Amino acid sequence: MKDITKAGDLRGKYVLLRSSLNIPLKDGKVQNHVRLERALPTMRYLKEHGAKTIMIAHIGRDPEETLKPVFDEMQRYQSVHWGGDVLGDEFKERRELMAEGDILLAENIRQHEGETENDAAFVEQLAALADIYVNDAFAAAHREHASTYGVALKLPAYAGLTFVEEVDHLRKVLDPAAPALFILGGAKFDTKMPLVEKFLDIYEHVFIGGALANDILKAQGHEVGQSMVSEVSLVDSPIVTNKKLLAPIDVVVDGSEGRAVKRPDQVTKEEKILDVGPMTIDMLATYIEKAETILWNGPLGAYELGYTQATEITARHIAGAEGYSVIGGGDTVAAVEKLQINECFGFVSIAGGAMLAFLEHGSTSVVDLFLE
Image (cartoon, rainbow, N blue to C red; front, side, top):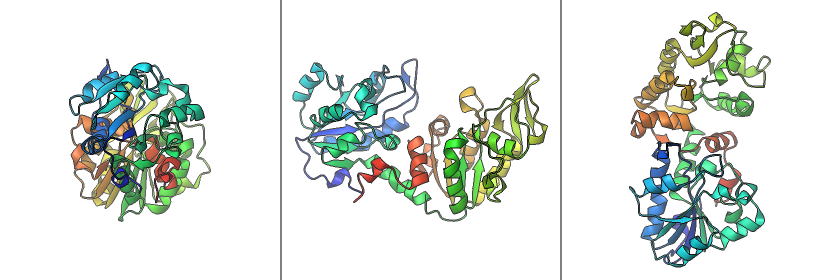
């Protein structure tokens, strides 16, 4: 890949660095440090090579959200200056005052409508800020936005160190050592069907958990009650009868009588499936133990509602396994960080949707920009 180490002499040059700082906040405090820590290698590389780094990123879905709490937390790791609005007069003044090795962080780039629209005028304004562009935001590599795609076509463009690391590890699991196990949680089967079909072809086993499992159970003829299901029906899909597919053999439900563990054929119309049960966790553990490659994206239960047990126990099982493991997805990474077992996996991806897009297609349009 065309990465930052191939950019030549950076001393005194303005570098526009697109980073991944979309970090969950609670009461204005950073809750997840993985993305923050992953941003550091490229930041430090640019600093050590004398670049004047203009750092841009987004946070949250609301354009009004601010990167200020992330900036404040970042000071614990690396000296960075606050720039505010990337197109504001104050930012321009601070840019002019930058010394070699300085890093200037701009406010949430999505506060500008032109960002998500990849607006040509906004792209030109961003490109005018720098001599070189570096993309270290693999987590946004499935978005053709101004700061991830448009500006890369206007300036000499390079991939950041963490961006390259993400691509290398995901390429590795696309050519896995056997037996290979793919664990997929989360929701929206309608968007993930091509991914499941692909991995049923290249992996020995694919386990479906989370709300996705409800679609499998429903297609198998089980009652799923009030559980979340996708708009697409799997009744006639060959996915359901594929011998490589693994589905929950017991589930945790919530209903009028409270929380209970049941077999899929015991679920009633009034109940809602919210996690996989202990027998399923044990079954999955036997496949994890035997696997040479383990790929995991997405929680096994309604993690955001406090149904964390299956996800956390499975995380510990994978952490203790001998096989090469790659995990990703927001709630999945949050679970391993909570358990403080980040270092026990082959690789922890900071991407969610971009990880799934790369796994499905073997690349993304943003990644393609840096292929040599």
